[in-house]
Amino acid sequence: MVSEGSSDKGLLELRKVTKVFGGLTAVDDVSFSVRKSEILGLIGPNGAGKSTIVGLVVGALKPNSGDIFFNGKTLLHLKPHQVVERGICRTFQVEKPLLNMTVTGNVLIGALLRTPDRAEALDRAKGIIERVRLAHVAHVLAKNLTVQDRKRLELARALATRPTMLLLDEVMAGLTPLEIDQSLELLRELRDEGLTILIIEHVMRAIMNISDRIVVLDYGKRIAEGSPRDITEDPAVVEAYLGKKGPRNG
Amino acid sequence: MGMKDPCRASWKKYAPPILAAIVILVPLAVPSRYILRTLVNIFFFAALGCAWNVIGGYAGQLSLGHSAFVAMGAYPTALFLLNWNIPPWIGFIPGVVLALIVAYLLGHLVFGLRGPYLALSTLAFAEILRILLLHFREQTGGSLGVTIPFKGTSVWKLQFASEQPYYYICLGLLGFCLYVTNRIHHSRMGYYLQAIKENQDAAENLGINLSGNKVKALMISAALTALMGGFYAAYFYYIDPDSVAGMDLSIKILLVAIIGGVGTVWGPVGGACILVVLTEASNYLFGGGRAGASLIIYAIILIIVVLFSPRGLIAFLPGGARSYRRE
Picture 1 (cartoon, one colour):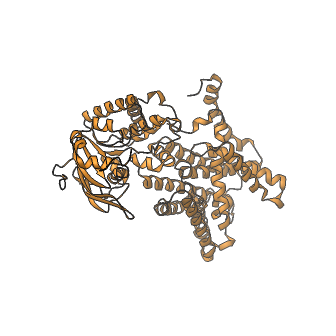
Picture 2 (cartoon, rainbow over the protein chains, first blue to last red):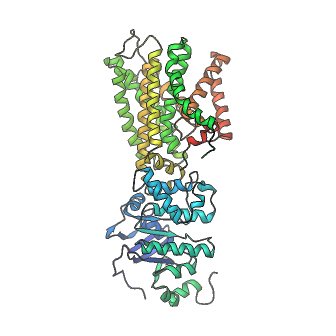
Picture 3 (spheres, one colour):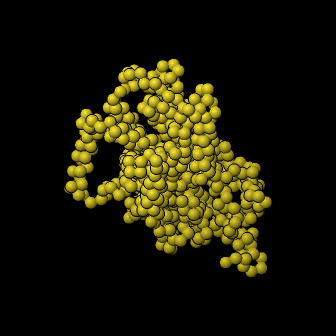
């Protein structure tokens, strides 16, 4: 089922990446790649190693072995801020807004990465705030936002750094079905404009709906890769989620 | 984004030039040496507060050891003048360079640490310097300190019998510190420091070089502090390890910024006014026998500020809240 390594060289490529925390192998010899301008869904039960992979790609964590390439160049020796400069930006599963700054201020700081000119950065920030539907709270301090708006702010801030690739770690948790649809629409638009997206999501309806391809992890191992349709029919995936004899978890 | 109050608008328009004119004309109109000395003290501490604010206020990296940088400016200035007759306006340069180098090295060493560890390591750093100054008696005079003899008014050696020249020099230095912090406040670096203060992980994830920006902020802060240290030596004619490298001075510097308003350009000026005036008042009321009374007063003000206006007293002024940038 699982092919060794990835023959199709993508924009982002993980090659035999392993990360061990103490005695726990959080990511175990995982290889996959993300092609340019596609949306790749990364799914798996809790503790499968999804967020760890995001941490490894952006340089917040260093793998014990393996290598990660972006545009054909390794990312391993880069610090997190240098990875962002290269064009990869993540969002945090637990939002990390700059609490005492307004929504505009938060996004502005992201935009300043690409221009030292405040007026230009502010212009771009305003455009992005419109786009993620935060205009009504543009001047509200981040600490006073609802959870949903904080999620949007995570996305807005990441977009402001003008990434070529986005890593989205559960940006839809807590959103209403209508809001999820709006988010999906936005992500599709972004992909059509050329952005490459790796998305982790527990909302299955969303991830099945939007992903061009899906990689499934379980206990740190890649157990499947394919189109959403293939994945749902894959016995290994069904077992990982549901277990052999009845449900393992809700 | 407040209401457009015509009264406030005209206040805003006319207050700065009027205040500037008063500050410049005071020495000509006020004959009292005591009042001028108090004002120089205010300028001096305001400038130090500004310098501390760059790293402690904007970047939120608490330094409890800034007196070390005062000493780095003060000792070379005093020793060059005493030993080789090099005037203070040249003698301060090696001190500033030294402070820049030390800040660069110290920054790389301690900015891996966060929170209380950073504060403690800066505190230890200043203590080590103070002990070294005590130890190398031959060069530094040890606990006796360095006394600079006054040999009559000399512009070349920045020695003046009257108070007025010092007033203008210190005012100029304060102006320079305010100019630098104002530039930072409105620059990309200012935004980056604020982001670092708010959340380091988020800042890093927005492409901000954490250690690079923190080290740069510390270097700017240290250089300005050393510059004021140079002025200290030239103005007081006497330095010793306890007065320029002691913890009292470090605490007083950060109180100026915290009481006035951390992360604002003008906050330290307000903080210095309050602290210096209260110190003078307590010395007058309680006399030399109970000189420690001013320390109790600092403690009380600090408690009041932390409890009721943790962002500093500038937040109480009309329009003061706008001194803090939020977007």
